[in-house]
Length: 441
Image (cartoon, rainbow, N blue to C red; front, side, top):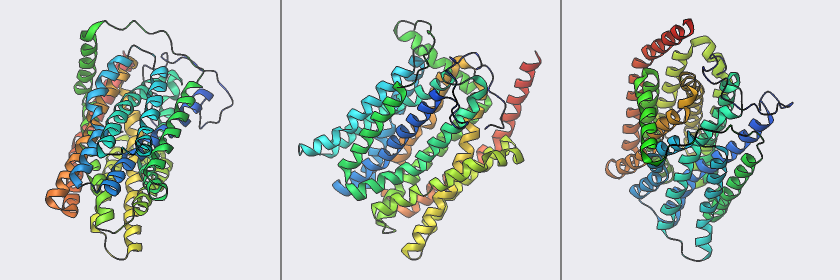
């Protein structure tokens, strides 16, 4: 997992190539960042909608079991374990812009595979797994690249503002794109939904290609695998050695694991227990975007009132407990739709508030030379657990039943939040003390 009220992150001011300033609005910071932000919005919506489109195709077209749906979700997210750490070490010494363009172009090609297979009459569930794993690999690579590319587009004193904009876009995609995927499947079918992803990734590649700022010449990468493995180990040691990064990373991994388990179960629970159509499942999830917008609007006010530590604990608590409404809901279909939508809206508020402060605090604590590797370490653990969560949710649904499995996963979310609330305050205090000591020297 992952505000302007926080101090400017240290160590970044000299790292960015100054792009040409323009009259771009305060929202976009500068023209190059505007192109980057719009490209990220499109790419994130494509990747997050596919996280639902592929499982729904499996459920509707192939009558997939909960375990099969869980394994398909794992195929999308498992590449985080394989790709992320090596991507961080590789990108630490190479330009990020061409890497992003190549990743988006590759995803466009892979997304076109399913409609092409359908037109040739060779659609099989194995094609879904191939597309899921291939796109998951490129998404894992591009996610590391885009976070390491941000300091090349904005000045050091604009990093928190830029990350705030990107986090809102990411959170909107996390909440709204799955619903959009369900709506596309219900209205147009799987092939048309996949073609929408093709168009989105082509647009994202064009957006990054249009950026004028160029990255500075980087040191020559070390030859062979020894240098890569050493840089990976350095990033992991740095993350594990700082209590603040360690607490945020472990909580991100725990939350994402059981959040994905709940979301995997909801795709089945909504259709098979609540009696929702794929469109309604998508609608209830996409309306959670209201909570994302609300969270981004109130984050600064809450942070000014409560402070960074309390706002992180509050945001995580809201996001962890909100899903309990879903298995508790009963009544007419209108009531069920209202309650599940409310759950996603409240979850969206908590998730967005937490992510805005969490990502800013992580970057504030990380020197520029470690950004790609620390980001890769975080994503390896926090986003890699998403794939495990899909399997956990599917297996729990098969063995316990959908409703008991949802309760169990939500209980795990609540337990993780309590542990996080116990250890975060001391970690923040130690970081702030070391930051003050460094400033005094």
